[in-house]
Image 1 (tube, rainbow, N blue to C red):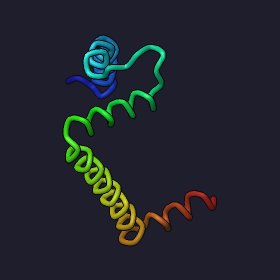
Image 2: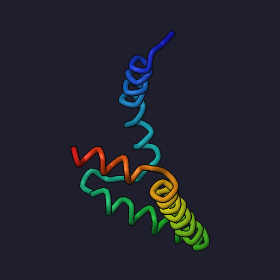
Image 3: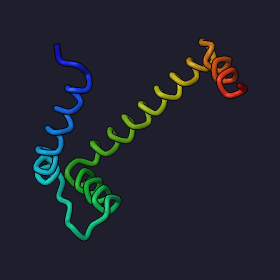
Image 4: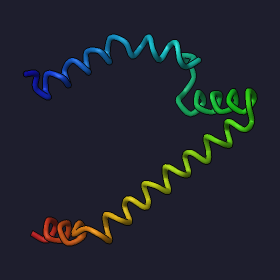
Length: 91
């Protein structure tokens, strides 16, 4: 049976081999361009192609943040996570 470390090593090797090709084909990043500049160019292209798509992307991002916020709220109020962290850091 293959263990978790072997699977992780295979995933890392696969990522090293194929990530550069996937990134080069997916993004139109220039060597003198930073990550934020590339991101703003991608957002501008999204808006120019279909303005509603950018709105849907913003709504999706806000929904994910809302879901994560409710998940954290549930974890704090319905579990003993706060008590566990108090005991963990008081010792």
